[in-house]
Length: 60
Ligand SMILES: [Zn+2]
Image 1 (cartoon, rainbow, N blue to C red):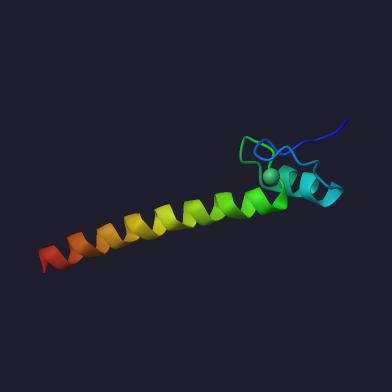
Image 2 (image 1 turned 180 degrees about the horizontal axis):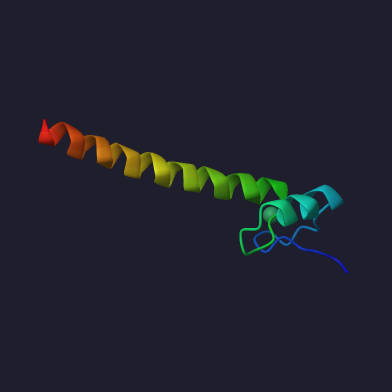
């Protein structure tokens, strides 16, 4: 059975399939798309963290 990246439809390597099994995100991603996905998550986290800091500063 072939595994394709759900974003760019590239065929996943054995290593990438193992990565997806270790860190399931609901969809199969190749390494490149996985990294893009992670960067988006990190940016979201960063933004919510900055918002928390704003609230913190406001209270003091
Ligand atoms: Zn991909």
